[in-house]
Figure: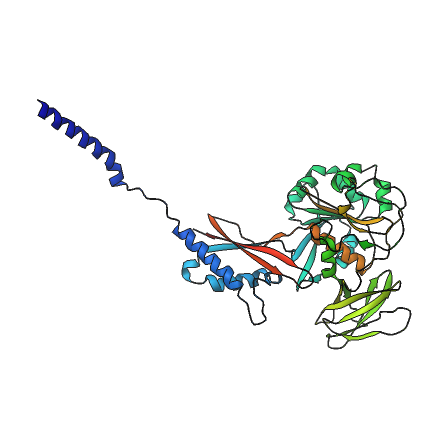
Length: 440
């Protein structure tokens, strides 16, 4: 009896074990393999490392990637990806920390059919610059509120009170644009700001962080408030200024252009062959004091008994333009006071937001860099020095993260990051991030 009972127990136990084991035997379990992703990561790491190998000129493709267009980057990367097994691999390249090569500047027209004369003015002001060994250009994009997110803008440019009024009427949309990384440059004088203050107080105070203009402020030349401390927020614009330089267009009929600084017009003559220029550094005497200046050459100009140094940064091979750089030494550049009488200050008395001011505390450039985006008020003015200041402010407001090669990610991806440091006029450290994924 006992023996039969034990056999029955054994049969039941075996049956239970069989039932439990059957699914495992029929459908064996295995952990999802990460080997394809590992291969993808290793390939991406190899590509980035190969791009950073030094060439004959003691540089690398990766160090100069900011100066390459999308086609050049794709061609170089494809050489390293290669192989039919990688035909199903897609990728994108994102940089963070370096200024953009191409900046989309939005202009909201306040007249029917758009103010074409103002757009032409902007194109003349926002000329290309040659920064850290590469061109930076500005695209002027007319836009309308109500669909701001459709234009893919980096910065909104505002230069009259009617446009400020448009911001006030679309304040929520503008704040959303700023919160998503956009920037705004307000380029009007303090007199107009004073007149319009009550009408658009919330824009001036809440967005730009400005106080109600009052008092006349002291006279003197305008200079950068922080030329040496990179840890402060008012450092970057002046850093860019010394790389942006002055763009002088050459008239093909006369081979002469005009360098306008300190409210003075200095002739620049392009020599035959488009490899050198002559510069009139002293407008009180006839002729050219500096002759046959080539790229990399330096020269000195005097203003109010002070010497300021410049260099020839770029001469167009087709004789269309020349770019001069402002040099820090021996004397930091100073601007002739182009402000009006009214004194504008930061509303929170944070003097680290002041970028440019006179010795008498009269400001010409105030930033507001918050979690809600980058905005700046730049007192309007004319001349290559003021336009270089404006372009530097736009570069700052546009941020530093952008896609060198843009792709729509269609699958699970891996990322490979690489730190790069380069720069001719100023130090420019940044991250290059390569995202890879299988298209199937």
